Length: 77
Image (cartoon, rainbow, N blue to C red; front, side, top):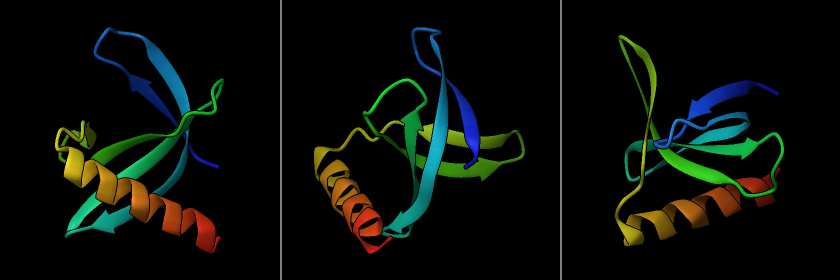
């Protein structure tokens, strides 16, 4: 399983397992599981010249759609 190092807004670094990248409404999202935690983190995901970029999901309606899509992906595997 791929591991990604994530730096949070407060400069805390987390090593996370990449659970998957999936699409919702023509955008990509990524599900991450911190190595020492059980709480899944969900972000909008895009790649640019500097590499992968993770964007916080600010809209609650979009977040709920992403959660449902992630649950469907997990239940299918």
